[in-house]
Figure 1 (cartoon, rainbow, N blue to C red):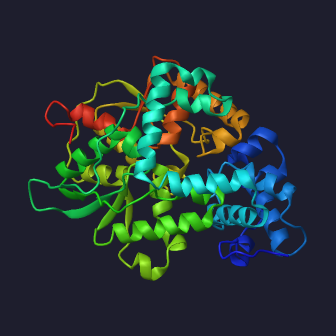
Figure 2 (figure 1 turned 135 degrees about the vertical axis):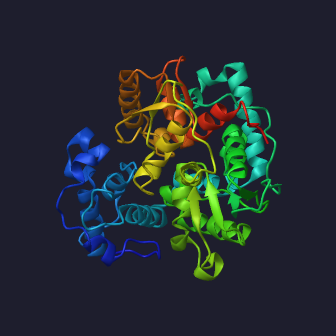
Figure 3 (figure 1 turned 180 degrees about the horizontal axis):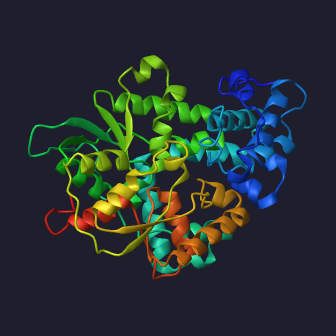
Length: 410
């Protein structure tokens, strides 16, 4: 039957794979099982078989596609530059459209309606804070218990930044729009505070549009394509007029950079530009708008989120920021930590195995301070490390280092 939705993998995308196999040793699921069907090459072959009508979208195909973490470690090593992340999301959109099912439809509704609603997120935040303070996490389902262990201490209610503008004390170098995100605002408010403080100090005018919503990355990764597209259109309108859209969660910034696939050209406009916070802060350090501090702060283990390193090719910028803060960095193997959005809930055993391996590597580094630029990775690492380990965003560590001369709160 082939494919039916406009999000499906295309012949051009799939035929660009030359079957060389260079991706195999970089794929975490292939490394776990050794099976060809659990590799990027195997999955692309399966997608092509559906396109050619050789096989159908059945349970076997759905299992082959859903076992993938979506880490995109195959992309940087691919000589023919196969857009694997795009084809994966397209295949999952087809599975959702053809198979449906109550659990999948419910997830899609949650990812668009709940995560896209500040009011609902306030209720979820309050409930999460209650669970943390009452010990109810101990009786939570095993699939969510690990994530609860990895959370920061959640406040009853985080102050909203939406609708606010932050001005530098000189002529702005540019105007940036900050994505508050679905969970970054209520659960990682300190990252927003550090981001705004650093951007303003670097000369940026920071606006936080009130009409913005969830970026839609989780929906797109899970195959809820229509919901992801609607969220993209809303954000395209909310951020119109800024020089850059900036996000401080790697998964969000990677997805925002791919909005040309999710929002119509007339909605997005030609001026749509996205930067991850690590790019803007590292640029400001390197051109002297933000200072470099003396060393001696000790060692920090630098974890590379997949959607920062693989999807955006951002590798050196977090290290520049940490070294500017006075830290020595121990770089960790970039293999996926196993968080991967909802993967840790849908496939807790595989996720836990990868998380344990990553935690063991961090312990071997000798560092008890860990830097990660993605909230899901941070939660995964914290849930698998003992209490003496601290996991923070690189911009938080830099802002803390500057705190003797600059306020870290906004």
